Image 1: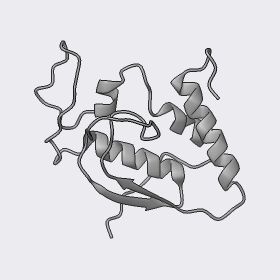
Image 2 (image 1 turned 45 degrees about the vertical axis):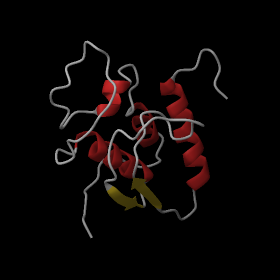
Image 3 (image 1 turned 120 degrees about the vertical axis):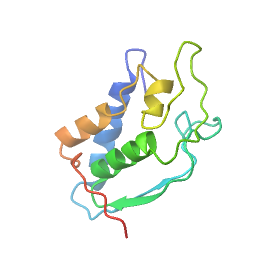
Image 4 (image 1 turned 90 degrees about the vertical axis):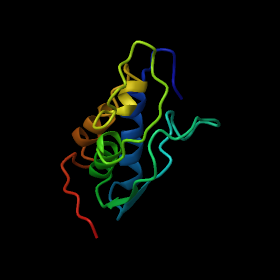
Length: 133
């Protein structure tokens, strides 16, 4: 439960801590479908059109590396430049290829904060290598 003093960064810390509690001492493997990436959390009961097309599936035994790789892929994959997002009127959007679209839509949110915390508490590492199979 979030209180008035909580921030999205602290929420991400809590998510990392809960995830660690779930997997600690147990075998685990993680799969992410990078599909219909929505502008808001997919846990909301409503959302808007996807801001990134379907990009594929990633898997790893390391949940932190997996989340970092997924975030980097959907936020900067140059070959997927047909993206339409609603930006503030003053934002230049003549070239969205290679930019972090989530940061454009949520400039006050650091999506890597939770991953840095997860790495710090031993959930995994942000280092990864993509291997296509």
